[in-house]
Image 1: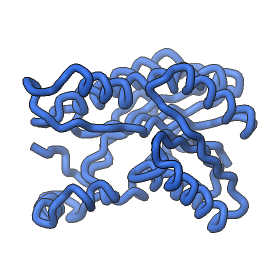
Image 2: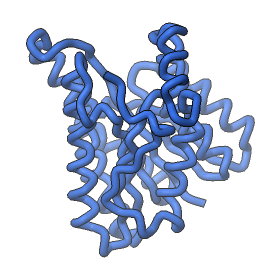
Image 3: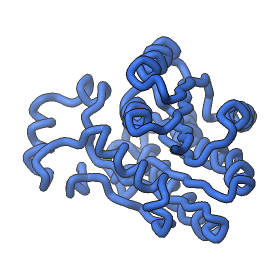
Image 4: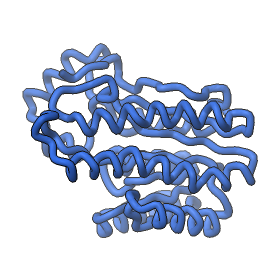
Length: 247
């Protein structure tokens, strides 16, 4: 089984990915920034539910290249290597283009996009030395534009270019790179921020008739992370249920 490294794993889609990977027998290293208690609970939950699986949580500010390098080295040493890296950590800052401040813009870009570059650069030596690697970037249909969230849209679009470039540079080294374009998913953040009326609206207009579940993303990640996805490279794969728009 593989070792997966997942950023932003203490909540939401990231926590779902940790659970899904562990349930399928993979060792998991995941990061958290400010939610240490939640990360510890998730780590302990995994250890109890899947005692044969190794699960560790690491504090990390993904905006710091030095911190990313340090955690990548630690995880690689402690786990004896990493086979798949999932760039999932993300923030958003709603606001129309004219009203968005410089610091707000920079924080979203640094967290969602620049961090993915740091992560890629840090783990490339690990993948090259092992002769195998899978980069998976969690993007969004917002990459195609969405009113009122310009920084988030730009960051998620940037992941597509990053992934495509890495795919072309390292595909011959048995290292693939792909992005997942997500739509609306059931998470704690969705539950807190989305009204029942809007939930019903999106479910009614999604061709499969429901909002996505974290396991839907987990299944796509494990496919790309394994040998079965070895010929899938440089792609932006929609995990949307057919719901390819918001606004």
